[in-house]
Amino acid sequence: MIRVDMHFHSTCSDGSDSPEALARLARKRGCAVVSLTDHDTMEGVPAFLTMCRRLGLRAVSGVEISAEYSGTLHILGYNYDIDHADFQRALKTIQRHRDERNVKILARLNEFGIPLTMEDVQREAGVGVIGRPHFAFALIRRGIVHDMMSAFSEYLGRSGQAYVHKVSLSPEATIAAIRDAGGVAVLAHPVQTCADPKKLPEILRWLKSLGLWGVECYSGHHDPAQVEEYKQLAAAHGLEVTAGSDYHGRGRPGYHFGIAVPETMLPWARLGIRM
Image (cartoon, rainbow, N blue to C red; front, side, top):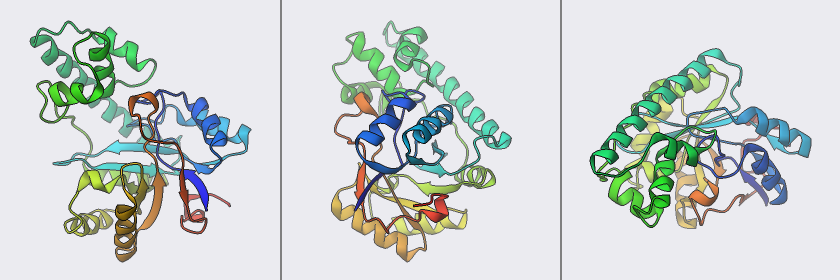
């Protein structure tokens, strides 16, 4: 067995650790291969890859993109060219939609009499892009709610009073953008996209027809039975298997960095990694 992690977040999106700190954490945890996958941005990837090289860690570029969908559909992109201009523009477009959504969320919170400002939220985000977890931290700091769960159930989740749908790229455009930049596209934490395993094969067939390359079978969101179920589904649909914790640091307690997997399981060569 070896320890890897191909899905975690830094301060450049909604994680609590810097890209450099995450590289050091990966080495401390004994990870053989890692990839930083911030939400809709590659801002922290160059610094992360540089630190990994200094530490002697194998790493590839990564990103997690929220595709336009009726439910949750997150696509991980790996081993893309970080200098690819069209991919950079695609992520900038998504970030612009995110910024527009943030303004609307703040307006709704203010309508409910909550005295929150964008400066309050940006303070929680630091240098990274603002996401709903940063609104949650700001609400907690203001004493409006007691914890993240309450922030999302009352205000920020899909049924929350201040929820605003985020416009993004279609699944087709998301996967195409990753592939055009030389990368591969992977479905993140499939349990969030479809909890019913009987319905997931149809979704996997559809996504594979768009160019999907793999499925994140090992995940901090999956129990052991689900891991085996998703591995079987991936094999049945000719999709590769990947593994990631979805570690966010303080924003998501209970998710531990690094996942143990069989050394021969992941398609290292096709991810551009020489083991």
